[in-house]
Image (cartoon, rainbow, N blue to C red):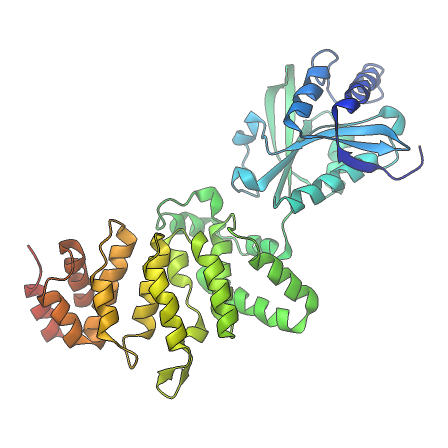
Length: 418
């Protein structure tokens, strides 16, 4: 054996070779050449390989045309993983696991084990997994040393019965496998802030939240845009990030929204917005998406007002909650001043929805309109154009605003529907 190993997905024709490696590993264990803690006829055995081949998650390394190593790569986490306080937390679909890495004892010392791990890392990265987890028996000092050298940290040791082997102290190890952008987000992580933030966003799971503060995300978005202009590799990295939708973490979606908001070309920005909107699933990301180019003016008029209104018209007709909310937000932000047209206010007033976050945006729109276009907004309230809840919520938000006079606040309170 002298060539570099070639890694590939295993086939059923590899089964006997895989079992041969298992048997030779047991021989080495029983003669004291290795200390994996594996037991013959218990683990690993032929049924383990057969089950993996059925799942299509068995991989092998070939050297000189012979199978020299085998391992299972999937997203199946051992039960005791739930007992570990992992450094890198995330949803299950962001975790890749390497199981039962076995190298032919005759091929040891050739670097096949570390090469197999590197192959797994590349495969996981290609599949979009930023977290790697692996385990080994505490007595397997050779494996522990190898993984440590490859950058894995030991995050816990859990006593367990492992695949039928009693009395195992299972060492749980992990490594971050993300892109540079993902790595930077982890460096800005604040667990306490994540706990606070997730409480404000219904439906978001804690494991999908890193916990990066909004000012840091805004600043990082600007840094990424600046770097992309100056460096080709930075540009490619940013493009790669923007091409991943949906992202697995709330913070990544927020960063994406802030990056889009910095795009200066209207058509490029609108294309990015249209790609992004279908994946927005919470009010925070929706409301943070605020492209600066949409508000670009020449004199007192919006440069791209007509084009923006065409898209808003389509967004308001969407069946997606946050696409509708975003369209309303754009009307509120850009079309309640010089560009105001009562027809769009009528359009907002005519919307009827069971979605809380749409109705909240309608209320917010009219609370803002009472400050900027009071006559038109007041007429909508007088005419009872809004449903009771939204009508009263708009009045509540207006009376909490500093932009509304005390006199108007007093009058608005008389318009509440009891």
